[in-house]
Structure formats: C-alpha cells, structure tokens
Image 1 (tube, helix red, strand yellow):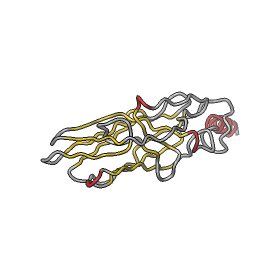
Image 2 (cartoon, one colour):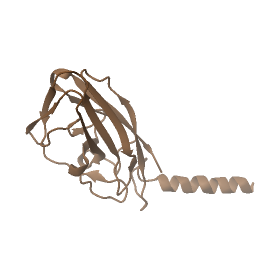
Image 3 (cartoon, helix red, strand yellow):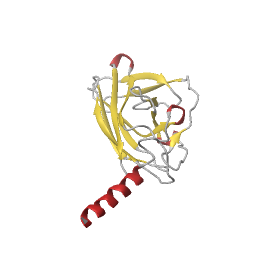
Image 4 (spheres, one colour):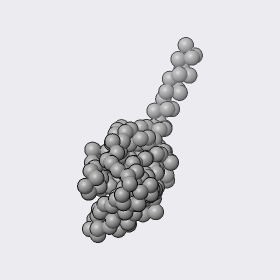
Length: 187
C-alpha cells in the first residue's frame, strides 16, 4: 500500500513538471522543454550531397535547438543555385516548416529568439525579397549552423506542438531537397 502512495506522488509530480509545453499551454510558472531530433532527409539531388545533424537538441525558455547543415558539390563541374534571402553561400535558405507550420529554421547569427518562461520563439518578421546565389566548385562544401525555433505568430500555445516538421528548398535545376525534424516532450 505504501508503494502505491509513493508511486502516485511521483506520477503526480511528473505531470506537474510537464505542464506548459504540451496539453493546454498553461505554464504554471515552470520551464518546460522539448527535444529535437532529425526524423528524415530527402534523397540528395545529384550532384549535391547534403548532411544535417543536431548540435543542440533542447527547446526551453532560454535555449533553441540547432542543426548543422552542409552541402557538397560531389560532381565534376561547378554548380550554383539562387534563392530569396540576404545571405549568400548557404546550404539551405531560411525556411518556415511546410508540414505543419509553426517552426522556422534560420542561421543562428540571424535568429534572436525572444526568451519566454516556457519556450523561446522568434518574432514574426517581414519577407526579404533579395535574390542571392550559392556557387560551389567540385568537392567544395558549405556548412552553416541553423536555429530551429517556434514562430510567435504561428503559435496558438506557448510552445510548438510535438510532432514532425518538414523543411524543404528548391535548388534550381538540381531539384528539391529537404529534411524533417521531430519535437518530443523532453521534460
């Protein structure tokens, strides 16, 4: 009987610590966290070879997950592609998740998330219509670190819902490439 009382107390305290990021979205004054992992990647469009890895997996009130994205020209001829943005030589342009929306992936140095007591998030920003180009010689690699963070305007609750989010970009005549991340309750 005493064991059941202890178990009930442990289960009850666990439920209290996870309130805020999942469920009804109320914070209860405690910080919660979500954990990010790579859920999948597309097949590389030749001659480009992509790599994505998680360098920081926690989304809390003060930290945001980070992924490192790299693309290599695995061919024998120079390649290039153009996209809207303000920073050239990117393996992946800043993007909002397409399925579902609510997360954005942007260069760490350009993402300044607003701290929150539950989950940091990015303020909604205007669109940048400049066209920039990335060009790679054979065997050349470009690698950058991206933050993956919730977009304030897309959030109906303080944290993005758990689930799988897909990011994708078009690489001109080389085709499309994308990756998916999974957010789970990390409390």
